[in-house]
Amino acid sequence: MTKGFHFKQALTDQGWLKDVSVSITDTGAFGALVQDDNPNGYPVISNPVVPGMPNLHSHSFQYAMAGLSEVRRNPVDSFWSWREMMYYFAHNVSPEDLQAITAKLYMDLLKGGYTEIVEFHYLHNDADGSYYARPEELSAAIISAANQTGLSLTHLPVFYAHANFGGMSPQDAQRRFINSRDQYLRMIETLKRQQSAYHLGIAPHSLRAVTEGEMSWLMELRQDLLPGCPVHIHVAEQTKEVEDSLAHSGKRSVTALMDQAPVDAAWCLIHATHLDDSEVAAIASSGATVGLCPMTESNLGDGIFRAVDYLAAGGHFGIGSDSNICTQAVQELRTLEYSQRLLHRQRNVLCTMESPNVGSYLWQSSAIGGARAAGRSIGRIAEGCRADFVELSYEKQGNMAAVSPEAVLDFHIFSGQKAEISSVYVEGRKIIDDGQHPQQSAIDAKYISAMQRLAEKL
Ligand SMILES: [Zn+2]
Image 1 (spheres, rainbow, N blue to C red):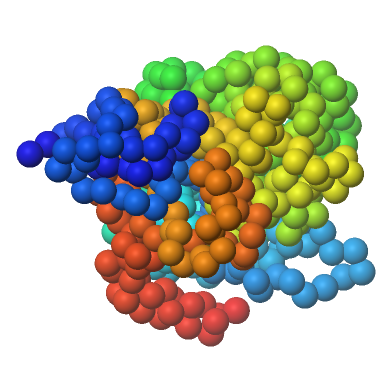
Image 2 (spheres, helix red, strand yellow):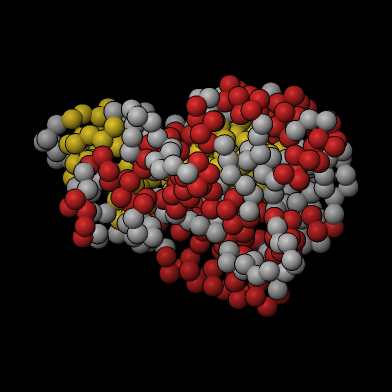
């Protein structure tokens, strides 16, 4: 018979619906949703079901240093001193280590409710800075980890050429990240030829790392090889970047970006923390998505995104795990909401009177924004979308009897330490079953070996 599911309770475009039957197509997408209290032979999922969450920003190798940079090393520790630690760490990761760390991360992200990862990949070169014979050597480690775990991948090879505005020469500490135009072109051409199991986009690292001329060249490359593909860029994460941008061009970072690149709905601006009023309006009207990484931004002391103004202007946003100190989608959303409560001294900030449940509003908005950022039909339980969904557990939490269906996500996000996720499906296939991944032992064993090797070098 046709493959499909019967959901007793599902978060759809029409809000929370009861008794929804849905078929799954041969390509792993949802068919039409039908409300019917007869499951018609489909397996019944009694627990509440929500769309799988796209994770729109990750640097997978940084998972291995999560928790290792929480020691004060100078009187005013900052993003910039953290970055020194990250560089130090990046120099010691081999392709084999990267595969093991990434597989562990992707398995843990699946358990945390993510079904798509957008990997902002800038670790390109061998430890001494020389190019690998295959420019895609370390991309291959990422792709292998995605295939092993079943987490769907949007891969964004990063173009990274300079240390700061004005084409400043890169530092030795950045040697594993630095591309030449020719090497980057060969990497994209090769990855494009091989792409079937992943989606491909491009990522100028930042206005610090890419000159105006290089940005124009990247846009031509995109037009020739990957027209319409996602473009992601780090921007305005730190006040220092905005100050350096002003010193270089007289323009703030986001204004400078808008002036030199054709930012539209295919773009994702990662962080966009420090904005003036005109920049809030410019991003919202461009149709781009802002990629918020609330746990990493908190950890690094970046600042607080102007979410209230941005949403009032009609802006789109999604969430990413960035440095991967946190693998739970609910913690990112909780931190995002709490940052706004602290800033505005109000409660229940990121929602609307029409959609007053903060949990549902945040989950759905982020899932739709993440889908925009990845450029894929995902993030919704709706006909034609890839059948990615997450089953939240009722049984594991005794006090859910008092929770109305509309408040299920509020409860999962704002009570306890993490959502109780029992199962996670990608393309209609169950990947996480009762909190477990089928390759857990093998992935854990390789990860532990990699960390032991790294611990000896550090
Ligand atoms: Zn980042």
